Length: 134
Image 1 (cartoon, one colour):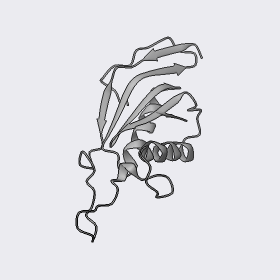
Image 2 (image 1 turned 135 degrees about the horizontal axis):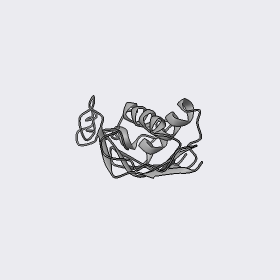
Image 3 (image 1 turned 60 degrees about the vertical axis):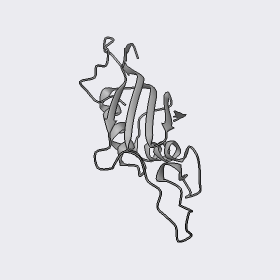
């Protein structure tokens, strides 16, 4: 691991979902169910539920080391920071994160790329760029 690049902030919208999850009204007037971004891994209310469900999705789908990746959330926005091995892996992570219910936007902030045998490269806003620690 000798090549390191760093990203700018890049926003990737989940185009198949509207921005901001809306809670559904319950039969009891004035009460509503929790929005999708507040639902935990087991279906319980969890303020950071979306980030935890994204982490679970990554752990089930990704075989590469993502231990230096942090996953956070701000409402229905998933925020990825830290370091990953390649841009290809980052693109895959962004695709997975946008597929998790409750995600409206994936934001990548200060992402570093650790590519073996490569020279340091900066990540620009022309490619995909998007915690809970993985």
